[in-house]
Amino acid sequence: MAFKLIESAQARWRAVNAPHLVALVRAGATSEKDVLVERPDEQAGGDQQVT
Image 1 (cartoon, rainbow, N blue to C red):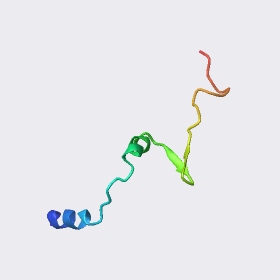
Image 2 (cartoon, helix red, strand yellow):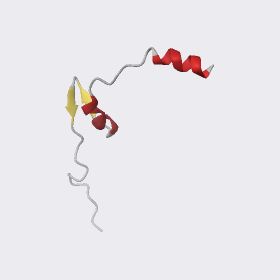
Image 3 (cartoon, helix red, strand yellow):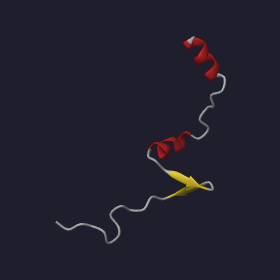
């Protein structure tokens, strides 16, 4: 049964056509309208705590 499931899934898999972008996806990068969205700098701003 597992063999048949894997065999049928294999027919629908796509090859990665942009391997240079895989690292960005793994890092959590997002895009809007095909433009990479930069994450806001977590250390910037006035909400830092002083100890």
